[in-house]
Image 1 (cartoon, protein in one colour):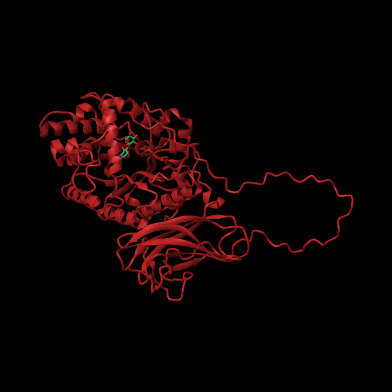
Image 2 (tube, rainbow, N blue to C red):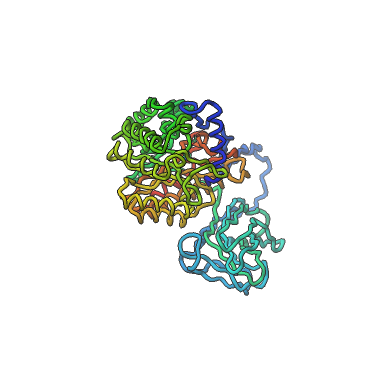
Length: 573
Ligand code: XIL
C-alpha cells in the first residue's frame, strides 16, 4: 500500500529534486529504470525428443497382443477444483472435519468477503481442523496455489498452518504448506503451492487448516485452489478494454522530457490507443511543470499531450492543480501573508484551469491534503511531508482551489484525490466530512478520487465496496484515479511467476467488480491505472524491490491482469 514508507521515499525524491535545482523541468523524475526480466513460465513444454529411428526388426516380434484398453496416464479430474470456498451458499459441504470431534458451522456473523464464513470449533487436538478433499480434483504433475483466509474466533491470536495430506502406498504424508499468526481483529492469508507428485497410487489428497490449541475455534473464508499452469487462466483475450463500458478507462502516461514519453514510443501508443479512452499526465500537469517560475507558465508539453489525446478520441483527466509535492521552489518558498498566498494559489488554479477550459473531462483539484489519521496535512510529521498551502492559508485553501477551478471552467468535473482511502476509514471519513460541508455551502465538488496504490493482499473487495459506498451515499462521483498493484512488497519475489500473474489478475478483477457493483452509472467517473507497462512504474524506483504492478509486461505484452480487469467490467448487470 501507499504508506508512510512511500512518503519517506517521496521525501527523498523531494530532496533529490531540490538538490538538482528546484522546480520546472528539473522535477522530471519519471522512472526510466529497467526492471528485471519477467519471463512467463512455459505452461506445458512440448516434448522435443525426436522420434526413435530404430531399424525395422528382421525377426518378427513375438505376437503379444496389444493391450486393448491402455490405462490413461493423466486422467482428467472429475470434480471442480474448488467448491464452496467462500461459504456464500450457507453450507458446509464438501468441507469436513479431519476428525470426528470437529464441528463445522457456516456462519453469517463474520466474513472476509460476502456474508458468510466457516467456523471450526469443538477441537480437542491442535491438529484438528477443516479439511478439503482434492483427490478427484487435481492432476499429477500439476502445481496448485492454495490460499485461505483465517481469523481467530474465541482467542485474541494463535499460530495457524495449512497442511497437505497425501495418503499413498507409503502411508500418510503431511506437507506443511503455510504458517502464520491469526488474530480476532482481521483476516490473514495462508497460501502456498503444492505440486501433485507422480509416484505411486494415491488414495487421498486433501488440505486442512490446523494449529491452534484444543478448545480454540477459528474462522476461514475465501479459500481458493488454482492450477497455476492452466493456460485458460493465463490467457488474455481482450480486444479493446475501454470499449466494454461507457465510462472512461484511463491510464497515466509519461510525457514531456521523460525518456519513456508516450509521444516518442510507438509500443506505448499502441497500448494506449487500443485499450484506453482517457489519459492522465503522470507528471507534466503538476504545478512545478506548469508554472516553473512565478508568473511564467509553460503549457507546450501539456498541450502536445492533450492534442495527442484529442487526435485519438481520448479524453483527459487533469492532474493536479494543487498538491504539496512537485511544486516549484519559488512556490514552496513564497513569502507573503495568508491573503498573498491565497492570491498566488488562485492565480495558479485560474491560469491553468482557464488554459484547458473545455478540453478536459475532470481535474484533481486538490491532491493529498489529509493524513492517515484524518488530520489535515500541515507540518512535516515523521515520513509525512507537510503542506505549504495549509501552513500559510489554513484549511480554506482547499475550497479556494475548488472555487477558482469552477470559475475558470464551468463544466469540468472537480475531484478531491487521495491515497489509502480504499481501506482507511478515519481518513476517508475526514475527507467526506469536508465534502459534506462543501455540499452544504455550495462549494463546487463533483467527486472523490481514490488513488488505489494497493497491495496484492489487500484491501479486500468487501472493504473497498464499503468505502465507495460512503461516497455514493453523498451523491458524489467515484473515480479510481491511479490504481496499481504492488506484487512484491516483501521483496521475496525475484521473477514474475504464473502464481503472481494469477493473483494480480484476481486482484484487478475484484477491484473493478467492487467499483461496478457499488457505483451507479451516473456516478462513475472512471477507472485509471497508474502507468502503461511495468517498466514505467513509479513503484520500483520508490521501493527498490523488483515489482510488476501494471497490466502490460516489460515486453509490452498484456498480462492476465488485463483479462481480470475486463472480467471485472463484465459484471455490469
Ligand atoms: C508520481 C509519479 O508517478 C512519479 O513519476 C513522480 O516522480 C512522483 O509522482 N500520487 C499521485 C501521483 O497523485 O502524482 C504520484 O505520481 C503518485 C502518487
